[in-house]
Amino acid sequence: MKSVALLLKSKADPSSVWSTSPTDSVFNAVTLMAQKNVGALLVLEQGAVVGILTERGCVRNMLLGERAPRNTLVREVMSAPVRYVQPHHTNEDCMALMTDKRLRHLPVMQDGKLLGLLSIGDLVKDIISEQNFIIQQLEHYIVGERG
Ligand SMILES: NC(=O)c1ccc[n+]([C@@H]2O[C@H](COP(=O)([O-])OP(=O)(O)OC[C@H]3O[C@@H](n4cnc5c(N)ncnc54)[C@H](O)[C@@H]3O)[C@@H](O)[C@H]2O)c1
Image 1 (spheres, rainbow, N blue to C red):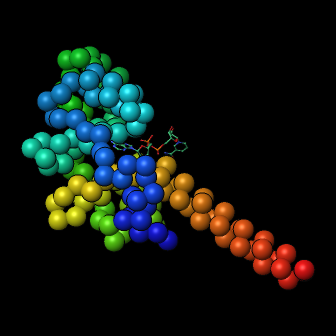
Image 2 (image 1 turned 60 degrees about the vertical axis):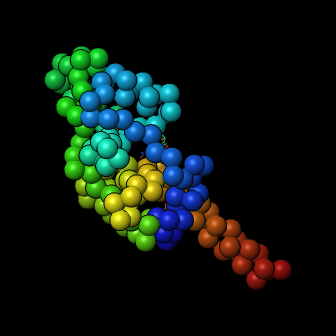
């Protein structure tokens, strides 16, 4: 199982995290999510993580509350507090936390500093690639035994 530090390194831009502010409108935030093709934005206030805005949170809060995205502030629909992981945690730790708390995105923090963000897709991608590697090794082993 890879560490969170290694998982972050495999992202195209490990330390870049798209974010919004509690006082921005949901319309602006969702526009940014669409532009960057991501399913969540961290909500930062004076550099501190104060919440997370997710596609699921937006859809449920906006539709069920019959709210207008241009007139609703991020802080009204964000989830808080935010669960996070540290660089020494493993893929398995992240999966367990995501499953237990029903999360799809986890910020990576160390000593109060934001280092990056991992999605459930990042974790699943890594697990599939590890499994493919093991399958390849076993195939080589079996072919080697026969050859
Ligand atoms: N989540 C699932 O279980 C799942 C299953 C099958 C398919 N998918 C699809 O796979 C695609 C990827 O899903 P996902 O779970 O990776 O979520 P995602 O779409 O939010 O993340 C896509 C990538 O962007 C990064 N990212 C997300 N938010 C970010 C932010 N604020 N700042 C910086 N980087 C950010 C993630 O780390 C990931 O590498 C989506 O199109 C989704 O519909 C997801």
